[in-house]
Amino acid sequence: IAPQYSGNFQKQALLIRKVSPATLRSDVDMFRTAVLRRRTQDVNGQAAILYDDLLTPAKLVTGEKVIIVPHGPLHYLPFQALRTGNQFMIEGHPMAIVPSATMTLDLLNRKSRLESSLMAFGNPSTSAREPLPGAEQEVRKISSLFPKKQVFYTQQADRQAFINHAGAARM
Image 1 (tube, rainbow, N blue to C red):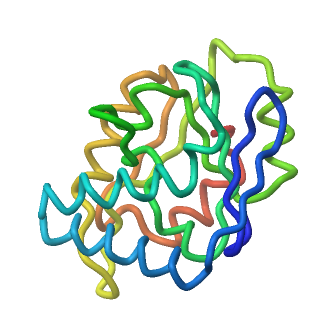
Image 2: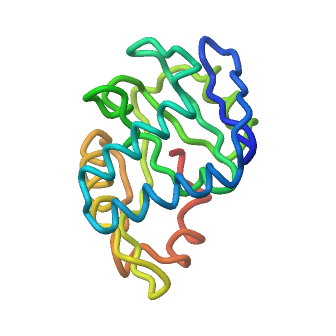
């Protein structure tokens, strides 16, 4: 998704919509600020605005797989937390956030694997940002679904661990 576009794959088709880069950046920043300051009403309102702006035109059907290729400020947007009605997006759609269109095509064509393994990083400790305890909880919950896993939290979730282990990871 380029900064001036929003889109998602629906029934293996791409929806592209023009979105103002400045407005998008501002909306994403407002959402993230509301989350960090734990302002639930602002979070819910901003999550609904972003869902309406980015995804309502896709006319998603509950249960439909959504693959998002973010760009620019969208890399900082937790799409799973966007809201439609009283439901988080993740509650109604299997989702994947991928860094490139090539990976998107691979995901679309991939068959489900029964014995996948997982490598995940939750709440990495750095002095450059706020802690992410929610990310640690997500990794703990998701990792419980995988029989083979390598998970790293806080101080263990550093760049060197990623470099040492990412090449061998399947997911």
